[in-house]
Length: 319
Image 1 (cartoon, helix red, strand yellow):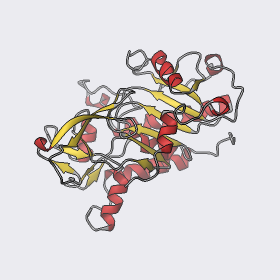
Image 2 (cartoon, helix red, strand yellow; image 1 turned 90 degrees about the vertical axis):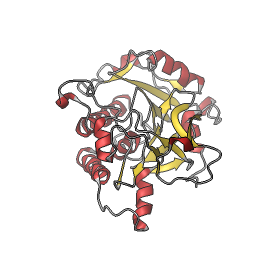
Image 3 (cartoon, rainbow, N blue to C red; image 1 turned 180 degrees about the horizontal axis):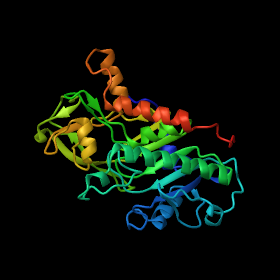
Image 4 (cartoon, one colour; image 1 turned 45 degrees about the vertical axis):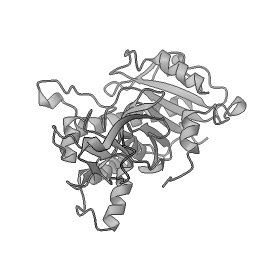
């Protein structure tokens, strides 16, 4: 079932094709991550050209870099163009590499010291810093951010492991909890900005739709899907627009801490159905098919909600 007509995602991704031109042409502000700002596949110039080709007026004159350890925006005025239309829609475009539930945080999976590996805590700390960074920008430029486009890989990847009665929250969902009233768009696979890969579909010979897990790789085939089909829009911690197609992922690209919370073995060859996980689990619980009353993902959502309540103050930007 399609939750809404796909106008929201299309508007964020392709404003020019959505007839948002002239006076309605939206603004975008591109932010790079300090961890890969110089990477050829996530560099500022390429992102700027892409945003402009899709119909955005890019505010940046220079690169803006998010660093969770040094949240500096004092010189932002020198890096953006004058804002002469303060009532226009603004999309925050975040250009970075990502993995399932690992986008804003630091950590080196190859570090011999386990304390330096990516973790739920380091990711949450960095996500909170990103929230503060964006609210600081809003206050500094006196302009409200309406949309957040996580132009990254796996930023909306969510799945349910019904065998272990667990599920995975995406970076996009968790950020949307901290950023109330803003629509956050992410992707469920490897996003190359033109299409999305590292996704599997059932082979045409398969008539049955597997609800959660496929254990036989002969039933699926790897494919490339459109940006719309592989995207989910969130607001206030809820999935508000997505396509309910049968798309699947493997455990590939998942960090050890993610595999642990999902109780997926490192050598697993299973495929897991993608899509808004919390909404799926809520439905299963109503049917009595998800026995665990509170798993890690539930506690994670509560933790982000608590952080939002503790740190949030009404935005001074009202337009």
